[in-house]
Length: 370
Image (cartoon, rainbow, N blue to C red; front, top):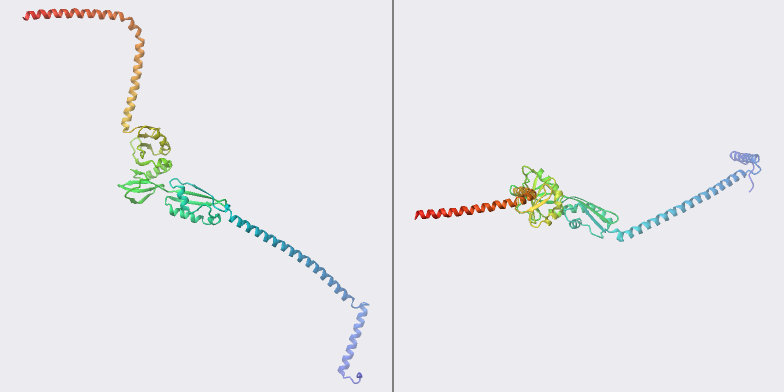
């Protein structure tokens, strides 16, 4: 099919033909003006871009690989340390070092250590980890089950040692007021509820009408050893004109003790030795110094005994003085011994003559009567 001639083309077709021819000529001129190879700038740009992309890809790949390697190392370290911790934890948890092994109780005097350990509900070989979280519970159990304990602290260490520190407010005895027995605590507080029959395990306190006096006495009384406290049956507050804070103790072994409020706690710790040295039951005086005497003695008897002892000592001194004087006059006595014998013989002779004359006069008088 032959191409159509220009004359046969429509005006619009002619315009398109001319426009295409002009655009081709402009493109050829531009390519000649820029370079012999018009596509070289584009190719170099593409190559440069391609090289940059390759370099950047290589760097990015290396960085990514490095980061991945570090992350894998960190993950491995984390997993390894976690496994080690878990192994140590289970090893510690199932070993004997994770169990309670030792107990120590301090602050108790009236309440026994065995009773405290029983009421605190901690046993040997209990797990330390679970016991540490129950310290408050153990303290509450101890306070609820023991009314003689005022405060308690339970601390459990990771080494398996349990420390129990208590503060007591134990029953010390019974005070008599208005012929009624009331329980007395260690802090001096008196229980309001009375008791008809007191327990024989505790002493009785008489004549302590003022709470201040009772508290002062109990503060000192609590410092005595338990062995001495257990031997006390009764304590009377018996002041005198000279001693306003005198105490009279009645002991279970039959002895009686006089002491002073301010010093009896220090001196009563020697009571077992004093009692053991006594040959018979009697009185122990701890008011001034410390001495004992047989039973039945009173203060008046003591004074009389002391006066008699002083009299005996003075008489002994007088006898000694007389003996000294007699020894000094021994020589003079021996010198006058002969004259004394002569006088005595003369006096005896005169006595005989007097008796004979009296006999003669008596005979003569009898003859006259006849």
